[in-house]
Amino acid sequence: MTEDVGSKSLADVAYERIRDSLLTLEIRPGDPLYDEGLAKELGVGRTPVREALKRLELDRLVVTYPRRGTFATRVEVTDLAFISEIRAQLEPLAASRAARVASAAARERLRLIVSAVESFDVDNASVVETLQLDARVHQGIYAAAGNPHLEDVLIRYDNLATRIWCMVLDRLPDLSRHVHEHIDLLQAVIDKDEARAADLARAHVNGFEKAVRTALFAA
Image 1 (spheres, one colour):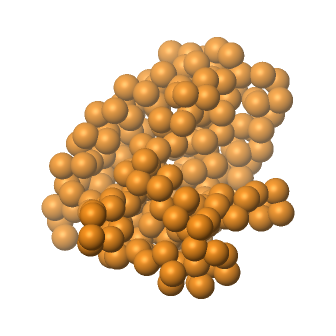
Image 2 (cartoon, one colour; image 1 turned 90 degrees about the horizontal axis):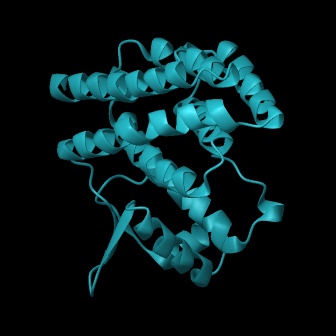
Image 3 (tube, one colour; image 1 turned 45 degrees about the vertical axis):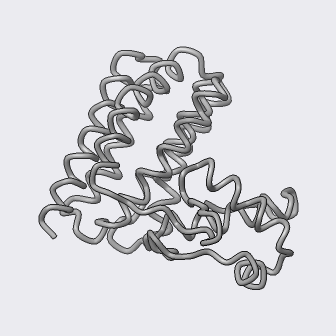
């Protein structure tokens, strides 16, 4: 969730910063987004902000209504089931494919992610740091799978799942286990174990849905 500003267009920078504010719920579901205010806050022109908002609408993170404006999309409980249904099919596909086709360089990048997860201090980490690590794990596997179309779809649905996760992050009883179970998944990909990678990815998605649903209904 960080970017090298020097290598990106202003529209890319605006997109990533607004996206991160949406994912972490700094911009709450249903909140209006004003291009003039966002441009001033981000230190860019209104045109890059408008381009960013168009991309975010394709990601289903914002919605624009004629004559009313642009708003952060609402998060409904039914969204969790729909998103999980898709991820339960595609996450195992990406994990098994990554186990099969990942290059030596990609596997080395995954080993670095394993080290990052092993040393991560969940109890003292900020929400943003936790989300950054989670995104690094998932996007590392998506990239290793070597299918840009699958990667694009999964990043979008992972972002939608992240918004729901943020709604209950402070109520999850075993966040450390959720974070550290990534280690076995990453190791299965590194070890070229397609079946185990797929099974662990599916279990991770199902466990995520169960934990979030429990937290939502316990609120």
